[in-house]
Length: 333
Image (tube, rainbow, N blue to C red; front, top):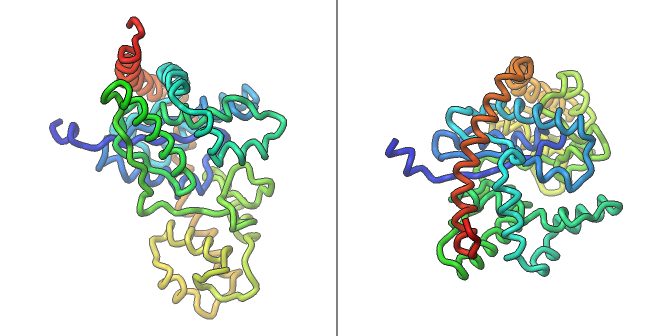
C-alpha cells in the first residue's frame, strides 16, 4: 500500500461517440493499459462531452455501454484502474460551473477546437461547445492529477487547464495540483486511410478512412486495401509519402517492428502486398480484443457492476475537491 500512495496519478478520458477507432486505440487506449502498473490510473468515459453535438438517445445509451465494454476488452483492468462514467459523477458538472466563473471569455475564444467544431456544426454552435475546455479542465483537476496523457492536438487543453488552476490557486491558495501533459512514447498518431494528412476520425465523411476496433476482419482488409498511397510503389518512410508513412506507423505499432526492418522485409514488393500485410496484422492484433468484447457485452450485469463501483469511488474522490474549492470561495458547505 505504501507504494500505491507514492504512485503518480494519471487522468485521461475518452468520448463514447460511436465505436472506438484504431486511432483511439493505438494513440491512447493501448497506452492507458500500459500505464496501469506504473501509475495510479483514473479513466473516464466522457459522455457529458458528447452532447455538444446532437445525439440520438437510444444510440447514445448503446454507445456508452459499448465503449465501456470495448475499453475493458482492450485491457483496462477495473481492479487496477478507476474507470467510471462521467455523467454518473455529479462533481464534473458542478466543477465545470465553478471553473467557468474563473475562465476568461478571450481564453475560450482562442481555442482552435471551438473554431473547427463550429465550422463542422454551423447549425448548432452552442454554449457547451464554447465552454467544453472548462468541463475538460474540471475533469482533470477534480482528481488532482499529476499527468495527463494527450495527443499533440490536445496540448492547448492542458495549457488552459493549468492557466485556470493557477488563477484559482492564486486567489484561494493551493486547491488544485497543476497537471503535466505528456505525450506517451508509444502513442502512434494514426491518420485517415483516405486522407493521410488528417487524423483518423470516426466522423470521417469517407467510411473507408476510419478503422474501428470492432470492424469485421473482412471490413478491415477492405479498408486497408483501399488505403491511399503514392505512385512510387516502394515501401519506405520519407517526407511527402503520407499514405505509406501512415501504414508503416500502424504496421510498426501492431507488430513491434522498426521502420528499418519493415523496409527490409518489403524490399522489391509492391504496395498491394504491403497493404495486405498491414490489414492482416491489424486483424490479428484486434482478434483477442474482439473476442473479449463479445464475451463482455453478453453480461450487461457485470459491466454495470464495474461502472457503478467505479462511479461511487470517483464521486468520493472528486467531492473532496469540489467541497474544498467551494469552501475557499465562500459557499456554506
